[in-house]
Amino acid sequence: MNILELENLSVEVEGKRILEDINLHLPEKSTMLFFGPNGSGKTTLLLTIAGMPGYNITSGSITLNGVDITSLDVDERARLGIGTGFQLPPEITGVKLRDMIKICAGGRPGDDLTKEERNLIKRFKLDDFINRDINLGFSGGEKKRAEMLQMMALKPKLLLLDEPDSGVDVESLKLIGRELQKYLKASGASAFIITHHGDILEHLDSKYACVLMDGRIWCRGNPREIYDTILARGYRECAECHVRHPMED
Ligand SMILES: Nc1ncnc2c1ncn2[C@@H]1O[C@H](COP(=O)(O)OP(=O)(O)O)[C@@H](O)[C@H]1O
Ligand SMILES: [Mg+2]
Image 1 (cartoon, rainbow, N blue to C red):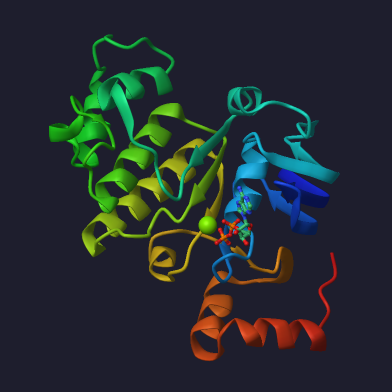
Image 2: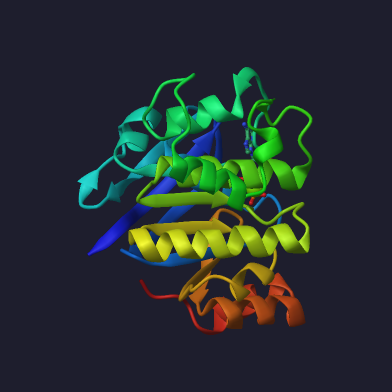
């Protein structure tokens, strides 16, 4: 069974074609990493799956756990178990982190934190941040930790994470990677992770990876092999390899 299936997906943003004929299957209980140069369409793909307004699907379909979600709104998709972690987490004035954690967990702002939630906050080293407005004045790494904390409270079945490791120091990266792996293993959830770094692979049990360039998937394979190839020879090698060995679905 696949948790996610993308069939012939093409997407426009503001009338501009960004993604072209994406075909992709993610088996349940698995993690896929996404590599690709800046501007290749990675964030667009993630936000299209999440159902963010403005990402116009011109053809193709998105299926989550056997349900066609192509025409569902972002909130309906979230209710079906999709959780999204943003590349640039927004600052939300007037909403405290502790209230957002309660909302993510299905409670109401102002409710007391449970022991489990307090534990989670401690593990993410965010005790001093919970009474602050979300992300306001947080450093890049603090925002990413707060984003992951909200995700763990939400308990999604499919996590869409856009560069959870960007701007994060080595200790926070270890923390995020380990907590993520622990959650995925315990819950049986799946994840789709965009990254520019191989370091997160040290902590994650991931069998699948893709390279996206110019709005198309150019390569699929083992994450470590793909990452090492990109490091050694650059994305150009992915394009050349694709010409030598055209990808089959
Ligand atoms: N709202 C938008 N309006 C116009 N172009 C956009 C918009 N959002 C993204 N794009 C363009 O789509 C392309 C892919 O962007 P993005 O998905 O953010 O790439 P990546 O995440 O791989 O760096 C870029 O050329 C970007 O400028
Ligand atoms: Mg991006």
